[in-house]
Image 1 (cartoon, rainbow over the protein chains, first blue to last red):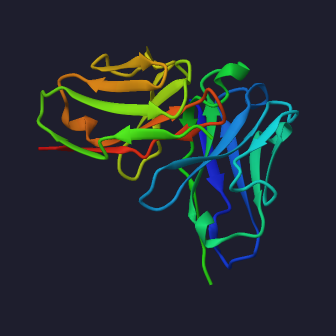
Image 2 (cartoon, each protein chain N blue to C red; image 1 turned 135 degrees about the horizontal axis):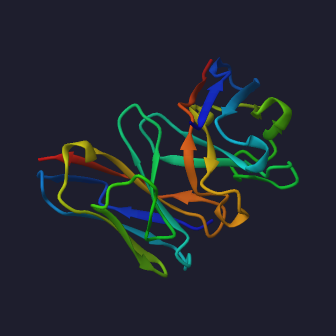
Length: 123
Length: 106
């Protein structure tokens, strides 16, 4: 069974940093690119970042570019999201999500999602 | 960015009814369109991709159609377990989502 478990969320002051982790199990993590998606309270979904299986290709949403860094450790089956210069508008539930296939054309079609890590940015 | 406009924002329907949710892209997305279902307090679940391909395990009462900039999700014979929010997402370019449709029982 595919499982994705996020951790590292919490309450943080504006301008500070936070690092999220997502531990994967039930599939060959090193074969798949991975995504972070966020959802502000009571709002819709927003794609945040993508990293390819070997970390060669990395993409960010314009809203987080230059502030967030996606990375992975395939030996540990773990995906990361380093968030810096946090703003109130970054308050959201952050999901890690795996694509349905490892082919690049499906890298943004997500069929496995974690339960989410809650990030609140407030003074 | 490709903008996704989803309608209606909310929908009330009776058990057994057929409902349709629409999604319009700001440019041609060449069938790079997925639909997700999100139940309250839960993570989104993939229903359909490639505009009309049913994901494994999804009941056949769900179907997707469309092309170009116009797409739709149809739910036949509405069941109580279909009460949820539904989101469209384009993946022709960097992904963007529609605003969502909250489906309730009448």
